[in-house]
Length: 159
Image (spheres, rainbow, N blue to C red):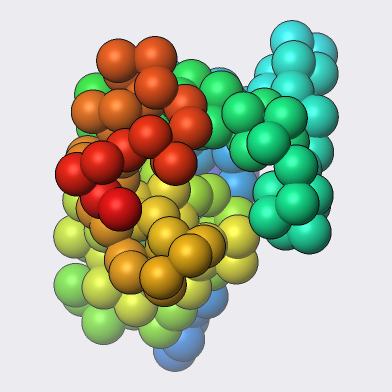
């Protein structure tokens, strides 16, 4: 089917729809400069998956986790919403988009103006202290990560 015809059909479907739910994943973020986790050379190729139990019980697991978060933080720090994010926010503003479900943790949907966002995998915009439960903005955590300090036990300002 011709590309232009497919776009026209999609526009018709969107115009005629009463309620739309969008589901996004890594593909919408890669254009904004954020790496795909699963592709060859992606985060899961370079870092091990750290379970919550491992994170709590193993210093090495925490260092692995924070090394990965440092890389993601640096990518996400300067990422800006692309046209796909803006289009979805516009659909919501027009009252066409009822709900936006994303697998992404970058917060770019909210930066583009989307309000009704369900983040299936959480967010990279905040961190919760495993000791006290306090919620920290990622920018504060980023200061330590950028300095190379990956061990929260030595983040005196936070603890």
